[in-house]
Image: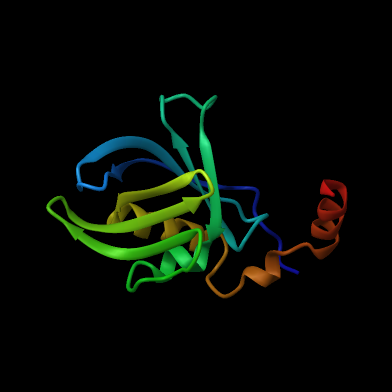
Length: 143
């Protein structure tokens, strides 16, 4: 098993929440990658600028990477390339029982985030960083 560095990747950014009429509202957000959870990326939305009311979504790093070039995902998280008047972007569609949201994030921000995550855990090498014993223990204590 590989040794994961304790470093994480955190990138603060502004995403645009896209309304049904395509009007947009800026939302502060963070992209996070942790080598201890090598398959996942985390997006934290900070609606009022503080961490107390943040909303977090976790999904596959591979889903985010593939979404740079083609529509990817089914169900709760979908990602696709999107060109806007502001430039090349990535669309991030999130669905839950509480509703749906469509966000626009700069393609360059996503690319930089992924490059930094790959410097910690190379694409395709994630399984080398999974601690099976720790994962099973965590699953059993969460039940």
